[in-house]
Image 1: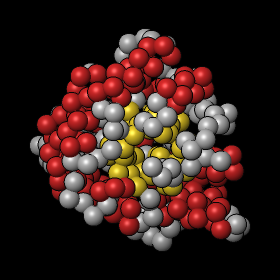
Image 2 (image 1 turned 120 degrees about the horizontal axis):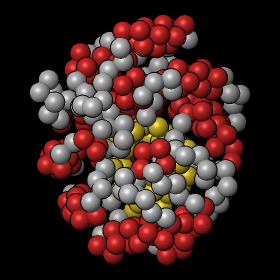
Image 3 (image 1 turned 60 degrees about the vertical axis):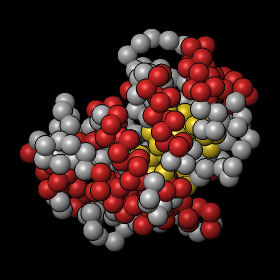
Image 4 (image 1 turned 90 degrees about the vertical axis):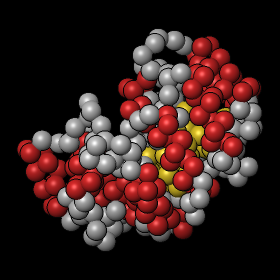
Length: 294
């Protein structure tokens, strides 16, 4: 398998006014991000509100996504705590020829490296054809991968454990593995990560920064002077002031009201927060449809 690399958006999910998943627009949103410069997307990651979406809706989307012209460019997030449901969902996905998954350890419960290795072992034993990008985000699940845990998983399952999204940022500077993809979870780490040998990024705000992020990525590999990284980082810093899902849905809703629909308990930014975000992005000459925006 070719090593996974590039700019990946943890793509947003789009909802109808009754809060049902709008499958057509969710897929169109992901495809648009690829057209804007992303090498691919992560469907049903945390930014896509995966933990809040029903399994039946996820399966319906997979069935439709299997006909996408960009089918091979998507990582499929599972967004499920249950081991059994995770395996069943992955079996459906693999039956539709999706092989690449982004999987976080279960939230809520306390556990360590040994238990995490057992969790992924059970998944791989049940779905041996899968390719898994580990999702390292202690803030969301309560567990942070150690370098040793990742090394042990790769040693045990070299054909299945193929990468890591590092949103806790304790791995991307120190983890060194052959033919293994490392993706920091922020544009702020993109350039440094590339300099260290990382594979790119998987981030929420690539929903807005696809073009800018791709420019930084391409300029790095072509040896050009970095003239867009500072703006990219400033845009990310402005979004980082708020919950990223709230900020992105607020940002997109200025162009299309459907993005106002967001699953409880999440919410849009309040009036003061909205003004602050939009004013600061305007000061950076960054708008949704402007050149070098999304």
